[in-house]
Length: 123
Image (cartoon, rainbow, N blue to C red):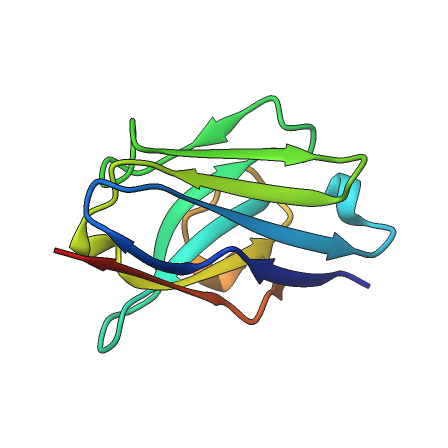
């Protein structure tokens, strides 16, 4: 019932910015907490940010706190991830996910996933 498609990834220099988008479809979107994860080659999927279905609450790990901002526009059925002050260690495939509870950092607890968008940060 929920389909997610990420976009906005690309190649940027360290210190630069990118804005990722996650377009959602499905009648249950407004009730789903949303999150961003990332996965670098050879590493496990890592939690990046979460937002409640209303957009009123957000949660970040220390690795991105102060640099990344998650937001959403329910009218457009879209979730965003604004990434500033990017570092080479941010390089990964970024995935959008929809779950049932806020906040959840375990990827296994999310029900729907997008196909991912590549973010590469050069030094």
